[in-house]
Amino acid sequence: MSEGRIVEDSTADTMRVVNVSGELGAIRSPLASGPSALTPAQWGMIVFLASEVAFFGTLIAVYFHYLGKDETGPTPEVLSLPLVICTTICLLSSSVTVHQAERALGSGSRAGFLRWWSATILLGIVFLLGTAYEWHNLIHEYGLTISRNLFGTTYYTLVGFHALHVTVGVLVMLTVLGLTLTRARLASSAPQLVSWYWHFVDGVWVVVFTVVYVVGR
Image (cartoon, rainbow, N blue to C red):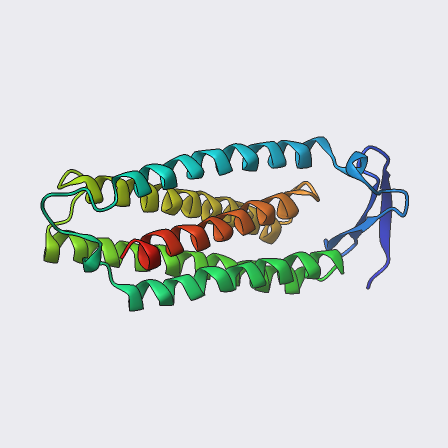
């Protein structure tokens, strides 16, 4: 690693290392332990994710409540399990790549961070494209729209809100990528907070996939 400048941050109990090449890493202080080590931004993200748990929990409960109560089709049998398995693999793989991006950033490897971060974005986009393709088939081949029946309404609401969260995550990661490429000023905690959000989105999908495509069918 090239010679750099170390700046102490007593409020976050970290030392930020900024290299002359523009690389940045974060070293956790040995004194940072326990709940008090969390920064206000980290606490904010935890509270936000907790509210999101309640939000998705409500959507899943509503989906279960109305499942099987339609008098007319289409029914959950029209869902394409092979396609969704492929997109699920892509999304869950993105949790691995975003973790590798965090590790690369922590070790001061800008190139490694950019590589793994870009891979995460690509996997997220593939997931969204797969979802769009699935919806296209459901609408044009089976006539399943959000207003067709109870299944259509609850399905598109639950899966759609998750897709919206993935879209937001991809857009934020693209912003971080752009700032990193242009060497603009970027908070050292930003990639970590984004990765927390992304892991949460992936975890929610595991539950949604199980409810909609396994149990619900």
